[in-house]
Amino acid sequence: MIAAAWIVARPAREPEYDGVPLSDYLRSLTYSQVRLERSARDAIRAIGSNAVPHLVKILDARESRFKTWFNEAADRQSFIRFRFTPLAARQTQAAMACQELGPIAAPAIPSLAKLIDDPELGMWVIAALAEIGPQTFPLLTNALRSRHIENRLAAVGCLRFARPRERAVVPLLAALHEQEYRMRAIAAESLGALGLPSPAVLTALTACLDDRVTDVRLHAARSLGWFGASATGSFSKLLDLHRSLGSGLEKQYVGEALFSIDPAAAEKADLQK
Image 1 (tube, rainbow, N blue to C red):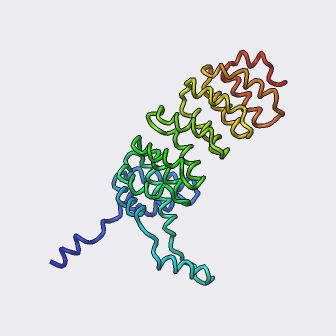
Image 2: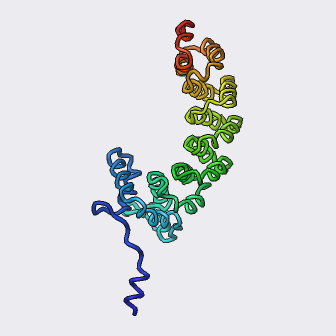
């Protein structure tokens, strides 16, 4: 009877791939070694849905007081070399794994949503939610109002992956009016990445060419260039901007946009001047 109860109560075995436990692959995601990271991502995809319960367990965990105390004590003692991996690091790895799994990680949405406003984890969580599917769209738009700027930047960048793409246009157009210039710049880039050159989008991006910040103008010009001939109405303003610039990256990007939109007119304008 007692043995049967122990079998029922014991934790589920950690999933493995090729004899290696999932936790080893998760640690490799943040080693910053391309070969290891690529192998880890391949293994996580191979484990597939079997990885999700373990990832949810990590995302829902709370930091151990003992581990925190031990790490703090070890930091004060040079002879203690062992450290417990901080929970935030493990949760970052779990979020990265959810991003790799995409729609398969849908059961982890509630756990990820609880961490969306975390100052350390938010950007990783938002990236994971963006890859999971259209059901996470409200979470991404809510993240645009996060207290933490890095999370807002992650949300405006990840909206380019929203499906259907049309849903992302309105919040991205609104982000073009944010006070924080990085929000405006990334919103301009995301609008170009969506590939939907509607009149509203083209008008808004053309207006961004007058922005006081170089990065915003640069990203708006690139996005207009991605739209090609659809952005013909922006050609004259881009040309005026190009002629007002000295040498540099912005002039190069504006010139590339002009050639993408109308190669013949750009050639005729002699952009070397």
